[in-house]
Amino acid sequence: MSQPPPYDYPPEYYGSGYGAGYPPPPRGTNGLAIASLVCAILFAPLGIVFGHLSLAQIKKTGEEGRGLAVAGLVIGYLITALTVVVVVVSVLFFLFLASALEDVDLYPDSPRYTVAPPAELPAFQPPATLGSNCQYPATIERAAKPVKPPSVGAVATDPARVDATIGTSQGDIGVRLDNATAPCTVHNFTSLARQGFFDDTTCHRLITTAKLHALQCGDPTGEGTGGPGYQFPNEYPTNQYRLNDPALRLPVRYPRGTLAMANTGLGTNGSQFLLIYADSPMPPTYTAFGTVDAAGLAVLDKIGAEGVVDGGDDGTPAVDVTITSVRFD
Image (cartoon, rainbow, N blue to C red; front, side):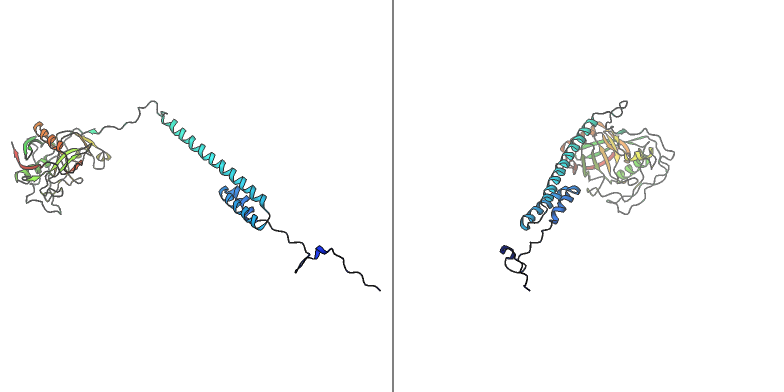
């Protein structure tokens, strides 16, 4: 019995080496190509990145998926471009809308809003307790210059006016103290003046801002921190408001020529005072207790014209202003 002939394969089938003659295994699809297509729909910029990385890998490895990568790139670029167009159009639309709304009067029957000028000082209505119990309690800070506090208790409101002259190195400043509207404050000022508390003290601060124009005096230290060692409550115009009235925080116009107390808050009046030489808006928490005469305003105008030492608008006056004495007529 004869043996079957061996299989007769063509020579080119055998090749050489282990596994020769078998067809090569199929190459898989590149993972980044799939990710590119998916991400192009979900987040276009990421799809574009994956698409370019995928094409680079496919070129090296010969993997499948080039079509997927190209599709991811095309979709990613289209969505990105469309998003940019939508954003630009939206921004332009909102800018146009905002510009158009500026010209629309939503309240045609109402006048357009303007910044209201400061209110005037309120008309004086004498409180029932005016001058009936003036108190000057001591503070933690010691007096900047030896002085006795004013007498406490009731203070007469008659005479209604008290005339005085503040002598300074720049000239005399005549003042009229309003005893009928601020008796406790006038009582304090006259007490300090008669004891020589203001003598040989400098007016340490000049304010020449766009809104406030005033010369501040009454501190023997010349630094703005000194006082008589006691303090006392506010009077007019503060006593024309309830203590919880929001209007106490809004400015009112203190007219040119007002003599007012300086303080650091309600009830902290001491010895420092303001000589206001131009209309100045301030909250009604500074007791107005007198007025400056025409000659005194001329002196203040001269001091104000010299300005502040460093060229600013709030600081030490450029010219020396020393109070030599306070005289009563």
